[in-house]
Image (cartoon, rainbow, N blue to C red; front, side, top):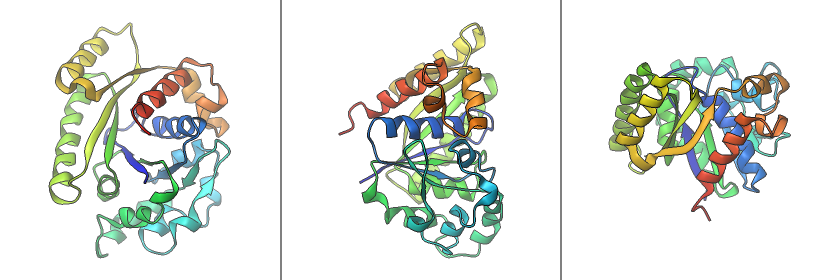
Amino acid sequence: MARVIAIANQKGGVGKTTTSVNLAAGLAQSARRVLLVDLDPQGNATMGSGVDKRKLARTVYHVLLGLGDAASIRMRVESGFDLIPANRELAGAEVELVELPNRQARLRTALERLAGEYDFILIDCPPSLSLLTVNALTAAEQVLIPMQCEYYALEGLSDLVGTIKRVRANLNPRLEIAGLLRTMFDPRNTLAHQVSQQLEEHFGDKVYRTLVPRNVRLAEAPSYGAPAVVWDSASKGAQAYVALTAEILKGTP
């Protein structure tokens, strides 16, 4: 059965999509069967995987509303993993889901039918603690939290941890934090080191050893429709995600 990981942080611009796409490609390079679910109406994970979101007839929106089957909407991308894509149509799902039964667990129901076909299912969440994010947390076993080492990030982290606890108490008792990933790390920045140290003191081995640096190749890769681990595997950013992949696979059969 698939290991389902939601990549979540309600703060925008922390590297959720970069992490989702590069981790999916890294796991695929390690001969794992991977499904990436783009659950962000911006559709950046879709574009970063090499799929034009503007030309899509069916997306994760149709999966959530029961208008299409996940197995028929998923697609294989050049980087070797499967993708359930998204576009701005998904923004409307937030309102439409409110009226539907089982609204928090519709993604889980859809993915359960595919779980036997994959080793990993990754869910790229939107930058908000919305009904879409709750669907992701209800479907997942674990949450991977990318975050920058800055003051406001710590404040936002406490909100996210609170949401995870509430979802665990009410909707998904198996949910746990897989780990915290320090992204856009600048070793010259004293505050970054201080926040990093605080995270390690508070979360211990839940903090990944991998540090993802600020790296222009990670920022450029989406414009070429490919993850950095595929487009420029020698770059420092790509190498960091290769290291993260190895960390996640450690102890995995």
